[in-house]
Amino acid sequence: MKPQKLLTYTRKAIDDYQMIQDGDKIAIGISGGKDSLTLLYALSKLKEFYPKHFELIAITVDLGFENYDTTLLSQYAQLLGVDYYVERTQIATIVFELKKEQNPCSLCSRLRKGAFNEAAIRFGCNKIAYAHHKDDVIDSFMMSMLYEGRIHTFSPVTHLERCNLDLIRPLIYAYEGEIISFATEQNLPITKNPCPADGVTKRQEAKELIQQLRNTVPATKERIFSAITGSGIDGW
Figure 1 (cartoon, rainbow, N blue to C red):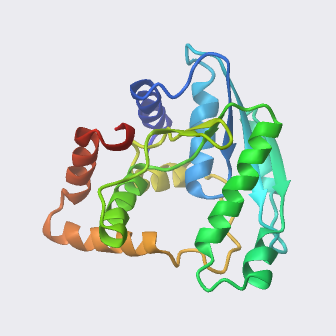
Figure 2: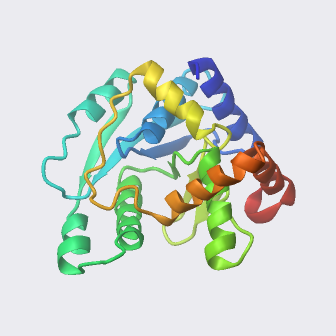
Figure 3: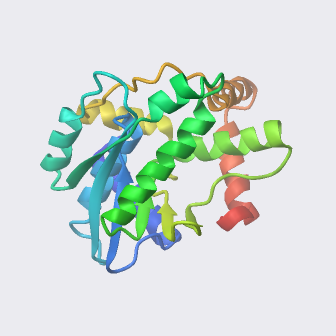
């Protein structure tokens, strides 16, 4: 995917769901993966010409695993002109040593989001941005039906009452395959996730199921996304 197409996707999502207003200060959560680095690129470039003025910072929540190096992430943010911060935590110790979680992803996610939100507030942000893409929307929809028995997926914009932050998802129109292509073409400094549970999730199971469905119905993803956007559920 070329940069112009990425920016077209990003601006359309932002305009369609009024994600950004004048004077916003937005924190992007940078995990080091392809999705968050692509979002960092997209918003930093959009900031240069978008008619509504907004500020941007990037925050990585360091879970406390040994030998986790954020040097390349810091350098990339600096290259894009975005202030970058690392939030140090002991989440890995809490999840894997103190709690000894058999299914650690849920607790880790809650603690990581909490640390990120607190950092965003401390730096004066009123909005946070996640790098969820179109496949994430579809996967979450499938997970909700299969594991919860309800029709649901996350919204393009969500107000977080507890911390009074608005959560935006500007990459919802880009497929994961397109992001992989962009990350490869741009040689993004992807930093491997040190978590031992990485990739072993219900979301991965949903991805594999959708891929199986595509063997029979090639347009499965497009049909599901169309159903979501046309249903009006949860802000869509």
